Amino acid sequence: MALREIRLLDDPILRKKSREITEINDRIRILLDDMVETMKEAEGVGLAAPQVGVLRRAVVIDVGDGPIKLINPEIFETKGEIIDVEGCLSIPGRSGKVPRPEWVKIKYLDIEGNEKFLEGTGLLARAICHEIDHLDGILYIDKMIEEVTLEEDDEV
Image (cartoon, rainbow, N blue to C red; front, side, top):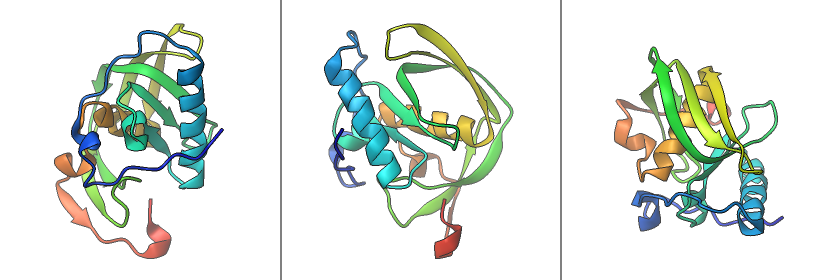
């Protein structure tokens, strides 16, 4: 596994739509492993492939229960809405209030190519939506309703 460079706001790759993964091979597995390592090193809760310069529909998330690797994730169903503060590893030093679904259900492929469903609430739902947005070239600042200044120890 290797750390990958996290692309920052001014990188045009962050605004491009990612391509579907049609074959789950060793390159994709290595990418996902590297993304988990990069996310942990940066102390994030999620990372999408475009954030490390790869325009493929792959996401990793860890909200404290261990890493989840999602290939070609699609939002299947949502319920409710919660406005909360978000940040992004590609936009360091900024945070803002963003409306997201309270509950989300997604369909995705695991690293073996099996179709699975995942339901999430709270931080998991927020992270899923945030990372899937990255796959479509959307950043949280596009949906932000208010910028928030956090104290250093309050950062998300």
